[in-house]
Image 1 (cartoon, rainbow, N blue to C red):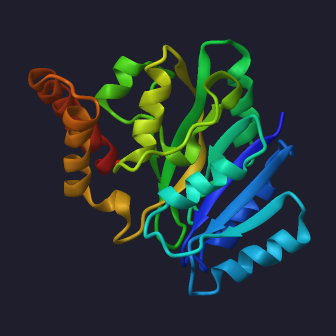
Image 2 (spheres, helix red, strand yellow; image 1 turned 180 degrees about the vertical axis):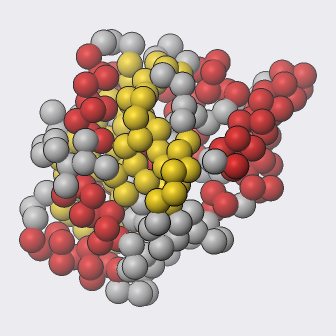
Image 3 (cartoon, rainbow, N blue to C red; image 1 turned 30 degrees about the horizontal axis):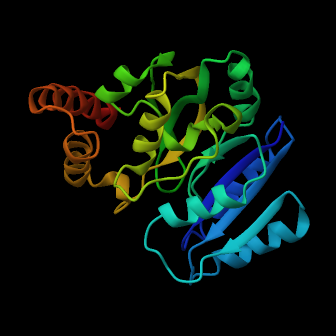
Length: 248
């Protein structure tokens, strides 16, 4: 029951060691960690290489050229993954020790193809302050259209049910991936607990709220080709949900 953990990295020397340590600390031990470095220049690839040299479950890959986004490194990792389950952890985020163990328990029925969790926002220097983002216990395709309840750093999917899936060249590519899975009639289930820590950094892609809203609208209209009135309704739900996430 191998879990493949995919970690894209670009210039995260200050944080990548913590991300790797949080995988090493997992109570579930049957995992592989695939770190895909996107041509870092700050020595973070060297830190990853040191960990790979000490633990055979950790493998380091490097993209041939800087891609400028985590999409290509993540897809590279998916290509190289050997596990039934595929999970994602960015190099500046952290998992809590029971994350994998608790999520694997949710896949016992044929309907569940994605497991995820609540997560807590931490400051750039790692301070915890109780800013928890909570999601519903179960998410269907229709519910996910209203908001991306599935934090990428918490998500894991079952390739035996879905096949091996890749991120599309789209903004909010993780959201598009979850939608594509749930559109087939599958369900995403939440452990109901905080299992990951999301680092809020100035200038990060997810911190650009105006851009994120534009990407969301394009997903409704261009990618999913939803009718205008339905798109407007969903977008209002998305904005309300995003505001609640922001103030937490």
